[in-house]
Length: 594
Image (cartoon, rainbow, N blue to C red; front, side, top):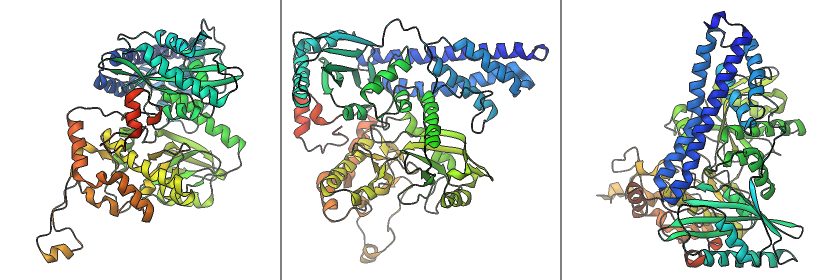
């Protein structure tokens, strides 16, 4: 029947089909997201994890279904660019007045890029100005709720807490409001001349992630503006305010690129992102979209950000600092804080893995609880750049070592497949570049990073310093995933005692070693730390060299326990539990300082 239809008819049908699919996606997405409040109230942490995985899979599933539907609808004309150009116009008209128009345009691009495997961008069949265009919206009410000055800070905080409806009550509302007020008043006394709050503006939707619920807003004192984030936990006795975050850096860490995405019921994501940008001005728009669960549109924003940077900079892509990888070729620009990772054609002989297995590891990290320790990687295909933007040394390496993933001609470089990540300073370089106290803090946090990953069922595989990095906030994170595996699949063993003098002197193991066998007592021989820094690591994290430490965590994981990892410093926690955590040495398996 489609062969009898005109291009105009087909484009109208295709546009309506894609619009319907987008509406279906948003309905399913909203349904999953809105379950977060119920999960929090019922303390259903396993259900929350399942929802997070389901939501991450949703976009691809709907796009797959839509591509199949549109291909069937258009028949042998499914790659006719004339029809798709008209489809784009018709679809643009259908979504122009949506609150989610920017997400709708990204969804359309996902369909066309899948069908055409577009190299670079094609303005004829793609929306290419979404990131730079501001759509006029009829906003009935803002995404935040305003409260004016109250008789006291404690009264104001109590009003804010009661503005949110939960299916479970607070354990002690007045106590927590007073504790928050004391922190706010101390902060004001240290930072501004005015001691009072003129007004607060709090996002009306609760942001959920893991076991936490977050009330996010800002407050004004005179001409000064500050973030105000209240972190809530649901204990067996009721909801408690666990922490209050009042500084940009603290809130930025909460929304870090190393953490899983929030579940927040956002009717107008663009306005929500704008609000978040006001309290975290150093965050990219792309990162904020990604942090609230719209990672596909976040990718579009990230690509726009890259193009804008290329237009304003004369720097070239060059090989990233640090030791050369055995699996990835990594490059960056000196004045840009992103790195680009292309899988090599062949790996070092010491690496027993395949391209497919490496991609599976990155997919695992994408869907896993990153616990603030695993760098989020955005996957791109068919990126096109001017050849002149690449250094000669980098081009030589890409052509000789990653030719299957890169196409180079006289004028252009096409990257067929690449992972894009935030750039961090490799830990091995960082320890040589910074003064003693910062190096010591990084070494201690290095051990905490390993423990945090372990608590979420991740074993890094290769714990060398070069595979870890340090963020601008001084946090140690992990970014090399080719040997990463689930902790539950590891077999932690003690090295058997030698049965003879010859076995004791042997350079080769005198015992059988299985594929997933791991011997923790050997770890300190491969860390790369020396002298005082090694002694400090051993003092703080000697339990990492004990088989029992890892086996205890496996027992917890197998029992279904979810270990708390807080996205803020222990010192920010309120009440007795926070004070105890702040004074502890933090040597319990998998318990983090943040």
